Image 1 (tube, helix red, strand yellow):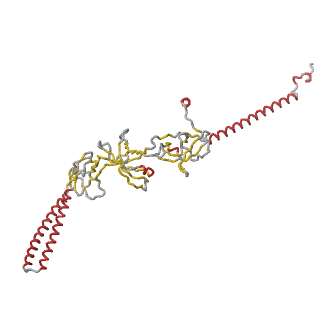
Image 2: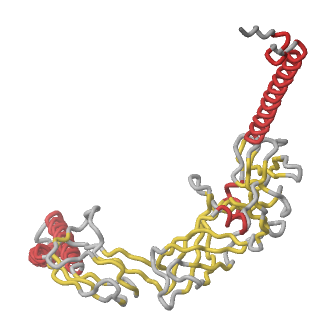
Image 3: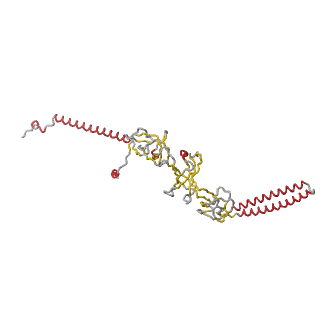
Length: 400
């Protein structure tokens, strides 16, 4: 029978001693400290990154532009309205029907040339009745004249009284007045009958026609359209409203050029002939008139034209900026300029001419300034901004 093996004689089967346990505890503590340190480091890094991201987000990114020197800063470009040198709307002066029209739009007509013929039977009948009344009044005048002469001769022989002779002379005067009134009525109706033929008042071109054969024409109707419109286009008048700020530089006799959209690349010479000499209260502009030669008929009445004047800026060429770069506030127009350190400076400027998309400045800006395009309304002097840079060809390829 075998004997039991003592544990003291087999050390492998004994548990870990205290030294080993101590080493294990120290190692676990070191690992825990490392884990805690890594977590704290990661949190600090994330906090710093978040702060940097917030700082980057709070700094606006802007695009800058460089002002351009406007070599044509002395050129004032304004819209103009082209009108005929003379224009007449032809209305009917008598009631009737259109029998025929003899001219149409685009036809060149001469002074006195017939444009249309009207039928006015009522006027014809009124003229016939007026002529009959005139003959009656004329016959009564002749009888009164004969009677007055006879009574005047008998008065010389004391055959009648002076009172009776004066009565006959007065009757002659009344009959003469009635005869003259009847004659005037005949002449009036003859004039109305003459208005049944519409004629051109001057040499020109027919620019409108509303006469239709058989249409009833009523004279004196305010709502009626003119039967014809005649325009004298050998010379044209161009009306321009000049802003008050430039009215002192505009004077009669100065030259100007016209450009029209239907003639790209072509300009027309014009001369300023007269000025209204007063500022319109609604538009704040002075109305001026220019005249241009139109022998070739290129300019048309009612057309829109761009009129270019050569006016002085007072201090040389102006500096141009887009209208989006201008800030308007209580202090007036300003621009935001970015310095080399990325800080913003607001600078007041003087606008010489505002053309909408482009603004011409006469003071407050330098061609070397880096001006922010479309600056935020809340931007202030001293703010830091990030300037947006345009992507190069390689960056554009990466982006693609």
